[in-house]
Image 1 (tube, each protein chain N blue to C red):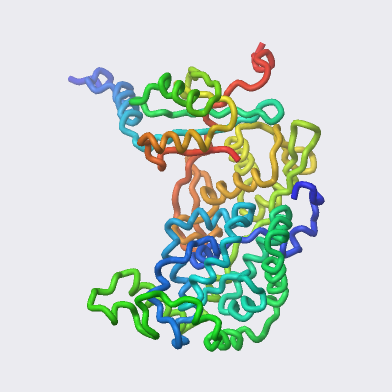
Image 2 (cartoon, chains in turn blue, cyan; image 1 turned 90 degrees about the horizontal axis):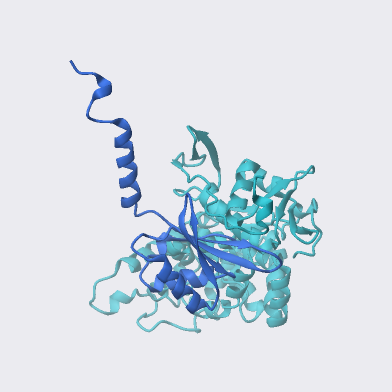
Length: 112
Length: 358
């Protein structure tokens, strides 16, 4: 006699596995580049959704050197690690990433 | 533009103010930005009246893939377009020989008027654009006076010119069209592959097909370029130092057949800001935004949530089913789900103490 609740297949576990594979296998995850306005004419740029094979720390360092701006790595509960740069670096980031072998189709530049 | 009267009800009436872009594939090509395509050399050149005019449509189709975005950009006819427009004379020279694409604003207005009537729509579109962005317009004025004025004149004439066909006929005999440049491999009236023993390439045949098609029934061309999707440009003005007001948001939403909430949500998510709707139905946006910027965002909204991906029609409806938005096209009946609007990561801006929920 089998009790359904005691089945070896746990629906919740399956769900988790499913989600895990989704996140790993989803090549459609976009890299989002956003801009936010600060005081006056100041802005900051955020980069979210970096693929896991890239080291955000090293990338940040490269960004800072390349764009001559400061920046930081922010840990967000939902979004994971987000690179945050001073000023409007959206187009620069996009070109930098494409030049270094990230497909342009995966990059989404937001903002105005 | 920002210093124009803000919420002008007459804005809509004025045709020139209206933002224009073409949805059908023909429209995409209409913009002069498209570099003169290689198709030119296939078209028969001198002497053959058949070829005049319609090549454009084909090129459009061709460019459609890449040009899609351009199309949408053209919608509001902003500065970028403007700049591109200056390339026109070049375009004209290239195109004219065989195809006589009606690029507006040639070096001399008089000539262009003669040349251009094969496609009226394009003209209009261009001139509308010209009128749209005042800044750019002035710039252009200073840059090339004759050009822009010529456009304007054309615009007026366009509306009620009965002689269009006649002009078209003139065009065929127009000595101006031919001598400008004849691509190397093209003999008069012959397709390039006739002179050599190579095989004809697909694009060549395709362009030939379209030239013949449109020559046979010009109505096809004009009717298809008839449809244009226009919305009034967003009227943005500043309230105080840190807030912008988007006055005609409800009008624009109505025009797009979208819920204002949806549009506003998208605007806020894209611009990374917040705001509210005030008593008069205007949208108050936190932060300083210019009209151009809001236009860009709206354009992106239209690409994603209004335009039908299949037939490019703007006649679509957005419905929500089981927490998923579906967009169904009224003209072709296609239906697809659209992405939910996500605001994504929001960086900490301003005082932390204000954000703390105490």
